[in-house]
Amino acid sequence: MGLIYMLGMAGSGKTTMTAMFGNWLSRRGEVVAKVNLDPGVMELPYVPDFDVKEIVNLFDLMRREGLGPNGGLLRANEIILENIDVIVDRINSLLSKASYVLVDTPGQLELFAFRELGSRLVSKLSDQNSVGIFIIDAKNLEKPSDVVMAVLLALAVRFHLDIEVVMILNKMDVASRKTLDLVRQFYSNPGLFLEEIKRQDGGVLGEMSAELVKVLRDFLPPARVIGVSALRMENLEDVFSIIHDVFCGCGDLM
Ligand code: GDP
Image (cartoon, rainbow, N blue to C red; front, side, top):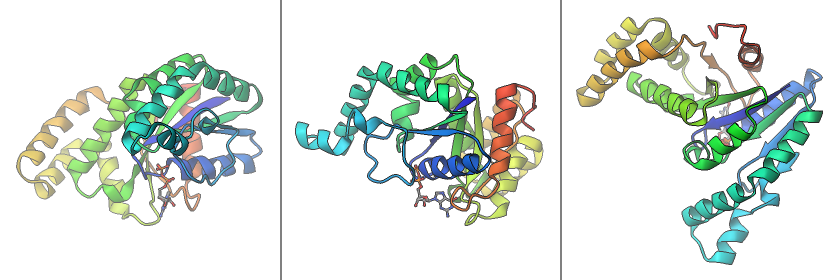
């Protein structure tokens, strides 16, 4: 039994992953529940078992309080936070019936991961087996410095939410295989990765990225990086396997 938070920048594929990984788990015979925490989502490719829009709907709120999209999102976040115990109760109730609860977090990563909402929710549910899947749009990784920034972001989310986070590269159906190799090289062969920085990243960004790699190497545990296509349901068995390694604490995530 476990709680799986889908995390990542807007457009990385959190909602698609919730739908498709949910389907994949159901086909394996697992009982899956899905939670939508985005008050502004118009249409979902899955039927949520709990929808935060029962508490607040962004567009109604904007109309009612005369707010723009950003003000509306911040206000919606406040309302969600005021009702956090309702959400925790609903998720706990789903966890009593389902083997996996997939939590689709709001489109904008910062609203959940870097504001009070995410850390409060994760901490209130911390007695459950929990993991964050940090989804990266592989098409956004062009240079080694992009990889360094993505790793830093995943790390910031991990520390802020105080949860184990596994990084996956999504949209591999349209991204180059070289992207996945580059991210793997970051973990498996930092020396070669530094050579790539010299080759591809110039100026201050290149210098800073190289220094960051050296620092991160001292702090980061080894990690298995998985490439998937949520849309095509490709490689989801690897996602399942890495989640299990986290839940049982038995794998080395390599
Ligand atoms: P979210 O904002 O992180 O929830 O991202 P969405 O799940 O809404 O996905 C954003 C866009 O990326 C949508 O148009 C999806 O169809 C598309 N998308 C998601 N996963 C994949 C994938 O594996 N491959 C491709 N090609 N597109 C994807």
